[in-house]
Image (cartoon, rainbow, N blue to C red; front, side, top):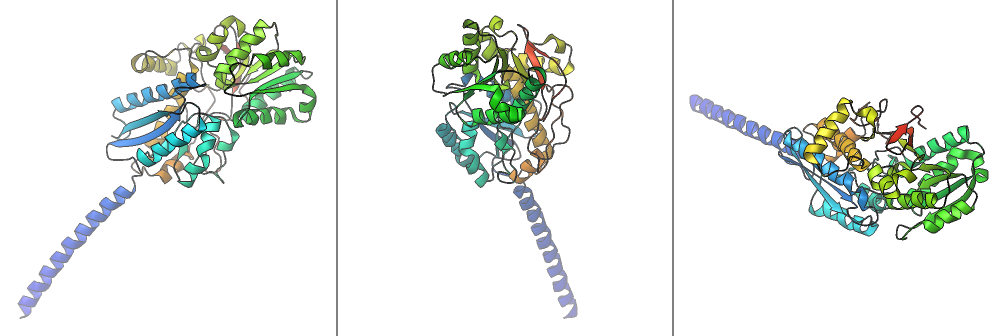
Length: 410
């Protein structure tokens, strides 16, 4: 009886050992699966965005096309730790209701891990609460609205470029230092984007704002032109023009001011600085003397022709986006921010959950991007959601934007 009991006990222990090993194996497997968020498999990472491929800001669609082209290169090179990026970019026509509809599709039907690089202040504002309530990473928005840097109330949303208020403050600082008696006329889009930028102008001018700003005029994105607004600004006696307009309307403003013979000191907000999308349609000769704020290299500027990162960018463009216009700043923008998205995904390793994506996006330390101006680095923390905080003023010389002065920040 004792040998039999011993044998039975031994068999039970062996069986128990196999059971423990099996459970452990399956627990490990389950743990591995829990490190994958929606849209992630061993072979794929699904990310989405909305972009205005049609409508009043369709020229900005080059950003999305450049990002898609860069992700194709990443996939050709083996992807992210062996996983290919499945990039779903949907047209919203720069219409907030359409943005809501397309974003719902991305999250609920396409089941994306995250939203990346969706364009526009009013459009992103329309989904801001929704994506935060669903805890979906809402990363590196193509908008400089200050509200994207509010980790306390909206911890799942983060911008990319310098905020409109930072940029506006740079212009205000320059005016106060170099043209303290300026009479300023302001054109701005009548939405969150325009109002946010205008606030930055007024905050930057401080108690001088009410005396220096002689006129403020608005336009709607549905307006056919801004010709009447430019006539009003000229009539106000303004000798300095702060142009807070999106590309289509910025081109109209440049052209109309020139045709009227109005020659103010003209500050053009950076989202409308692309030469191909704005200055060429306005007229290169009509754009001479414009001032903007740059944080990235201009591919048409000859000073970068021997820059290794620019050479690599040009080679990428030739292979993956040959139809892209070198003068279109949207292409270099998309290339840069797509680099940053890849950096975040690489930092995630095999923990591709939404929580970890957000953790990595807000833990960036002195990250360099190939087309940022020298001296500018990406830095974020759990309490600092403003990746880029510096820019450099540049003046258009008829061919390219020529930077001048030092890097300026808040």
